[in-house]
Length: 206
Length: 249
Image 1: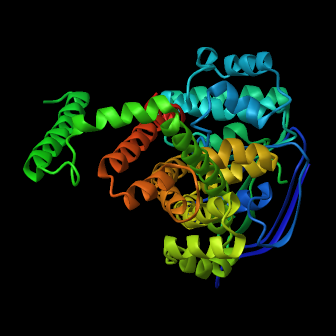
Image 2 (image 1 turned 180 degrees about the horizontal axis):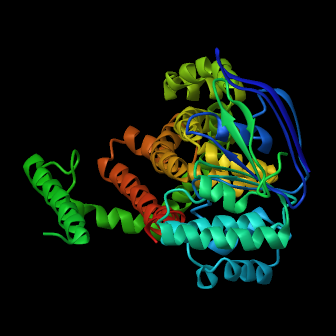
């Protein structure tokens, strides 16, 4: 379960976020939608514990995973090592199996810079799910991919989320993505940004 | 001429030719002996074991000072690059040490610690630490915040972070510091030996300087340059290629 209440987040004099509170249950996927620059990534960073300079409190489970806009891999380590360094309990066989799951079974020994951007994103996804996280955070994970790759990645992410069932919070500016992956959509609006509750998928108000 | 090895070879032969010409023009082996004239003394020093003994003494001091200076400099550089507050406190010290002449540090170390091995190695180390720190600090300031965030979210222990996230990013800076470090250190080691040790290449050069034996000064100096070139080609360059493998892959 993710519980977040951000009373206020400032960058210097300017207030970026104000009075945002939400919960994400285990197995639930919540999309955060909003125009660029409104503070979606800032909110994610607060929930992930990367940004701690804010007024409010955040409760998160122990096992956390994150997928950034950029793949954010260790380019100086092989793909396999990228999984086993981050998850030291993961056996090499399981790591190889995970690479297979995301569609890059033959890349274990390759370095990340030898992969295409799509493959790097797959590796980042493998890293996120290899630890069977209780909570998953994704920041525009499908941005700057061609439509076909984007669709494959979306389907892959859907399958992995259904299997591992983490409490998932993800940011996007594409409404289709939000509606497809998210069981609930939170929309950020205004300055400072606040939450505008949107309809849940089955048409009821949350 | 595109083969870089051929260029290196020809360039070195050119230097040798220049030496031969200069020796011929000087026409005084007391001042500048021809290269060929050094072979006899070189062989005599080599077979007597003198040359190897003093080379190894110098090399041991170089290795000690190098390892200490790199370890201290990298640790300080990372700490100062990461913490602005620590940097504000330590930066003035760094500026003082950067501008302290090597000779002053050496003399003070000998005066305070004594004419011994510890003083010699401490003096060389202190001379090099500020440079390493400055270079590594630049690298530590440019560390990728994205990787930092990733390491934090995945709760990587600090040892794993250091080994797999921080040090690989600093590798080019550390390699640069090591490169210039080894060159500067061996020169300072020679000065330290010249001033206060009774072994090593610097000591021998001091001795032959007093005897005004230019030939033997050149024999010892060139032998040690050869040792350092072997280290450069056999250890430093292959190591650098290894840590850069992922870039060129």
